[in-house]
Image (cartoon, rainbow, N blue to C red; front, side):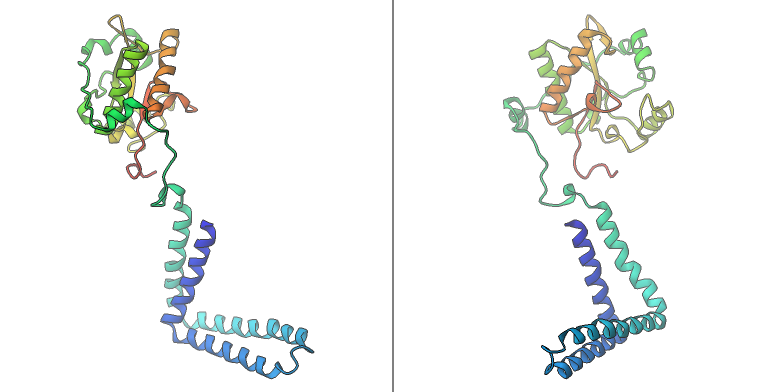
Amino acid sequence: MLIFLALLYFCLATAAIWLALFPGGRAVLARALTAFRHRLSQRAVGWQIAGSQYAGAVRGNIPRDLLGSIVAFVRRHRIACAIGVPAVLIPSLLALALSSPAMLPVYEGEAAAPDVQVAALLQGERLVPPVALPPMAFTTAEVALVRPMLVNASRNWGLLHPDFSQRLLLAFKIMKEKHGYEMALLEGYRSPARQDELAQAGSHVTNARAFQSWHQYGLAADCAFWRNGKLVISERDPWAMRGYQLYGEVAESLGLTWGGRWKMMDFGHTELRMRGVMRR
């Protein structure tokens, strides 16, 4: 349907520009219509008898006349055609290339009905961030092994988008009250410079460069677990792996995207994809 509309727009716009801006175009159309009407009147009497011959004449003569007129017209107006054709063609191709259902004003993506806790969040319940962990918690051997560049990461909840931070805090609350897991924020907002630095470290860290990650918009966070006074990050720990699975279920129930479903799995990562924020 979108392809048909783009082609229809292109044809109508081209014809309109041709007729509106070039008197020669109107003259060509008038001559073609006059010739067509003249031939119809000449053959009206013998239409039923010589219908096939008449149709052949129409198919054979008029297009050749029109083609010759069009070629002559293009030659006479080379500069105007060089400007007008791209002006019509480029918007059509861009509209076709960039079209997607999500771009339509009336499009609404599928969304699961929120549960009681989500409804309470949307109605104005405000959750506050937990007490910040001591800086030494992010310098242990386990943390350095799994996330060697975590020391300089931002864990400032104030830099996160309010809608995302409230959903993330609600996920923390559910994980603690329902599943017994204490959650910890490893990294929230990420500057463009840090994003490029992580990208340069290799694809095993991230494939996203500056402004290609939701971290730059305060809409993503990397999280792990706090157990017995230590951060537990590695999914090789069965307890932590079970926690990541539960965390993914909770995050998705709150409308967040969970990195555990990606090809390059990132179990502690969640993000809130807001329409119109990131231009890919």
